Image (tube, rainbow, N blue to C red):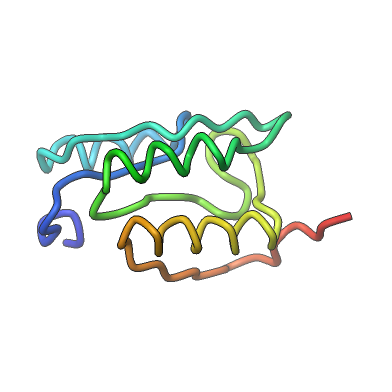
Length: 105
């Protein structure tokens, strides 16, 4: 339902990402913007910042804990920075955690 109501039909999402999520937004006609995720090195938030600023997506689709298919879990610091980046790009963020985030340190 969210995908159908986007004023800006652009969705930024992790790459790789859960295949059904990708298929859903693609089927709805959204332009997909990849945000590279390396489960061994983490996320390059500076690169993501550039991508978000340029694409100005209407939605950022992320799996914050035990990301599918990589199993990556974002740290609290990464989640805070992501919300800051989304705010700069005028994307309204909401964090919903089902599992405890990875502890820093």
